[in-house]
Length: 214
Image 1 (cartoon, one colour):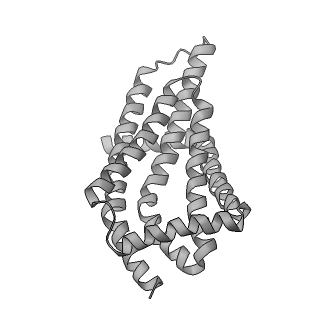
Image 2: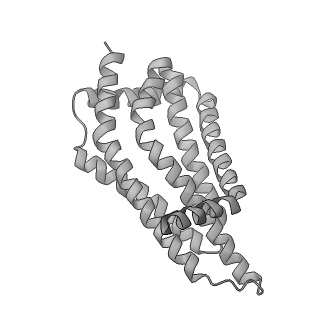
């Protein structure tokens, strides 16, 4: 019974703020598209220089000269946790709302640029490399970032209403508790994504590189 009530609360919450979630998704997709456009606007020299460093990285992977899985996990977890943490903190502050949107746009741009560059330089092989090296962990990371950004925007708007609209007397503490819970849940999912990035993605990438450079 409690589980059903909780599911109904979650569903009604998403319906109530569906416009914000839709806006966040569109903003992220705009970042992805912009990242892909940036690739096309690069000069041939810039692409060649970047692809040279990328080839060096692929060579290191093929030869097993990469960081240990544990180190990769730690780096990925700390990087994504800090990013999520900054978004969470900005949601508490009144002035952090535009920065949340900028950070999400940048995240989408990075994904779009990475995939776009691999595809533009290596065509089908680049797409497959992006599929095995970027997609597995981002199937978790991207929804977490989108949901966390949306929740931060919602909480920030609630704080703004409370600060400037004196009639808005709804208590903030229950929402803040849910906001903390959402952050802790996001950290758990980020740790799972970091595990995939550290232990599964390198193996898939190495296997794909073996096929690509045969």
